[in-house]
Amino acid sequence: MKVDVLDSKGKKVNEITLKKEVFGIEPNTIVLSQYVRVWRANQRQGTSSTLTRGEVSGGGKKPWKQKGTGRARVGSTRNPIWTHGGVSHGPKPKDWRLSLPKKLRKLALISALSSAVSENKLTVLDKIEIKDPKSKLVKDLLTTLKLEGSVLIVSNGKSQNLVLGARNISNLTTTPVTTLNAYDVLRAGKIILEKDAVLALQKKYANK
Image (cartoon, rainbow, N blue to C red; front, top):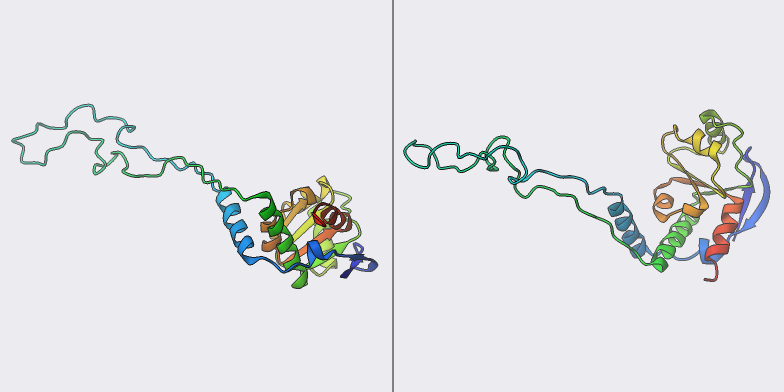
């Protein structure tokens, strides 16, 4: 399976063969669903916390005597039914993290990449060069390639100019190929892959 390799002007300069083991398998939708669930769960901070009646201040003295007032008996102002009292069954810090076996993470990424190819979402560039850390230069690249909406740029290495130039552009995500994950691939409407990033993916995942 061959695809065109474009330059920064959108002109074809070469071709590259995409290996079926990485870009041409039948996407496993069950594994993709599991991966998305795990990824989203791992983004939860789990820092929500409320004070129970044992943690709020006050309440050391019985508000009024047990009998004779005509009012309901009460032992503490820290009672959850009182204003400024404790919270019953409220959230406490919790670790929401889930895990997925390495083989399933690999299958999820390959499935996501194969799905992107079948949906014609993939664009391969010979080299991604951003001379200065300016958003205008990154926007000009996207305009030249006629890419709109949600875009993911995958480079072979961490280009500081690309990262700085892209961070203020909405709906644009950049990542080096070493940290590429299936969730970012699935979420993107269009994907730009540097040629060396394609070769790195095929070297890592093909025939393994």
